[in-house]
Each structure stands twice: as structure tokens, then as C-alpha cells.
Image (cartoon, rainbow, N blue to C red; front, side):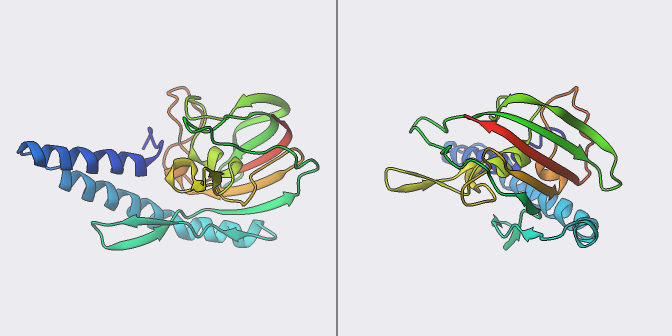
Length: 215
């Protein structure tokens, strides 16, 4: 499941194309493709749920359940994203504000330390000294879990609440300088677009972030 990047956006694209093709009278089974995509999402979440919950029970001190819903319309059900997180340290400086410009999110540059590990505690990616990263989807090394972790649930813009990736981040204010944050996620949100990535496919992963600065 490489190219995880946003299965929900893939669903939206397929749905839009399906409607367009119906208008043109083209005989393409996009409805079947949407149903197959929804079944795949549901299957991954179901198959990894027990292992994730067992890890959380054993390793997390104050876990928070992500309750954001995904609407699988063809299956006639709603599911959650399957992530759990905990705030290990609150920000030491909360002055940074995440913003939306109208043409898109204002992308922050972050200096941070981080680790990514499997449920068996094997570290598959890390930066122990603190590197500088630009947090957007154009960075092939990143996955949805990075953005869900860093960005707030929604950002106010012209009287509307705008959400990253249509679903929103995990916390009210997002991560800021001094934040230490741990999250465990199903593989739907952890795999990257990078062919050279060390992130294993089809495995839940645990991320720990320590934000040194953000601007």
C-alpha cells in the first residue's frame, strides 16, 4: 500500500470521475472501484486494530483516542482513523499560529527530533540530533501521520473552519516549540510516497516528535 498518501482523496477523485463519466455515458465501473477502495480501508483498519490497542495498553500512559470519522458511504458505515496519541510535554512557546492563506495552508518549517518504530520497537527512521523540515505533502518522505500530528484540527479562515486533508489534525492548537508528542497509527496513514523510504509497508507504526522550533 505504498502511495498511501491520502486514500480518502483517492476516493474523492474516483467519485468525481465516476460522476463525470456517467454524464458522458462512458461505461467505466468507478462505482466498483470506490467500493473496493472502501473495503480496503476497512480491512486494513480492522486487521491492525487489536495490535494497536494492545500496544497502547502496554506502552502509553495517557492515551487519547482519535475519534474523527471516515464515511464509507458504499459500505454504509463510519469508521475512525484508528490512531491513538499522547502529549508527552506541552509547548514551551505557544506563539506560533498555523494559518490558511486562501490558496492553501501556510507551510511551517520545523526543527525537530523524531523516531519512527515498529510495534516490536525496531527503529526504522529517526533524527536524534534535530533536523529542519518543511511540513507539506510535496515532501515525499512524509506521510499523512506527520500532518495529522502537527497541524491543528482546523484553522479559521474567513469565518470557515478549514481542515488539513479534509479530516483535520489531532489536537486543537497543533504542535509548537517544546511539544513532545507520541502517536501510533495504522499503516493507512504512515506509508510514504518515497520509493527509497525505510518505512515498512502494511505495518502500524509509532512516531515520537520533539519540536525544537517552528516558524
